[in-house]
Length: 135
Length: 135
DNA sequence: CTATAAAAGACAAAATCGGTCTTAAAGGGC
DNA sequence: GCCCTTTAAGACCGATTTTGTCTTTTATAG
Image 1 (cartoon, rainbow over the protein chains, first blue to last red):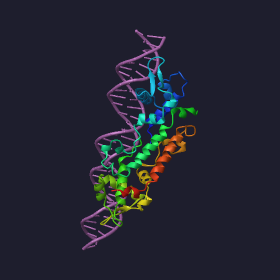
Image 2 (image 1 turned 90 degrees about the horizontal axis):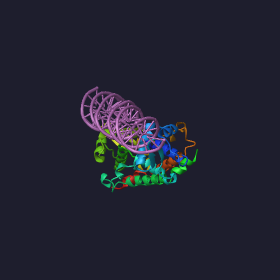
Image 3 (image 1 turned 90 degrees about the vertical axis):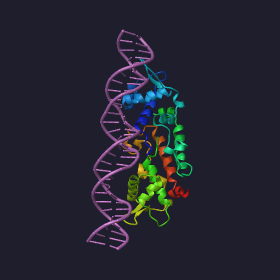
Image 4 (image 1 turned 30 degrees about the horizontal axis):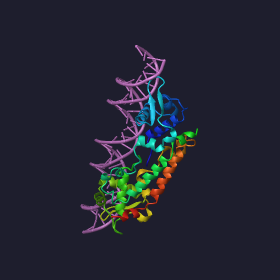
């Protein structure tokens, strides 16, 4: 239960790779894919979606490629994970109050809320900079 | 991300229903399914799997049905969830050390461990008895 | 204008989810 | 021993999600 998908795994690898780039340099998708062992076209999709939300910047044409959209110290693991997997949401009916007719009386509800907030807290307190420090 | 499936949702509803039974009484699968709003044959599968691991007891034939296998105070939400959804495992490579070649150097690993242990702690500290108290 | 590189979108195999249906087996009442 | 009830087991199945691939387009540098 609660498993990260490949997409999430790949996204993290890709972002960490970008965080380790020498300042000022740009990475080709082919280069990132090969280094991280991720299927190139799949990773391209992921990074394209990141470009849309400003998590990375991309440049086309000769000399193009990807760079982080912000300093890695300003990107949390939570952001990356939620960008690909959607919000941390252990129970469906937590999203819309209207969705679950039991939400007021259901005693399981507060437990899921606690799980959600703990996970958000943990992932939100880890920056990509920290994750990119090791070799 | 991290969503409980229907199966997990249904399992919890079923177990809570059983916990609310008058002591000594037995519930038919048809009765549980109707009261909880769960497809009967699907719920039957879930409770059958619970019977195998002793979480519930089942009796066939006239007067048969389901009862909890232990007092509800001795059953945790964690047990129920893991019984249907598998172990709390945010990252695949956490299961077998051999599975992930990066497990020693990967800095993301300890974060997932922390998430896992927090979730286990939260769900493990909630009993079915507590959850069945409300109306 | 050409070579390069990302963007966009259609397509699809495989796995998982969310069940159904049928047949078997066990137990109670007569 | 023979029904009737009720769970057990397993085959099956459609929809959705996952995990990609392939092709075409667009932007850019030189």
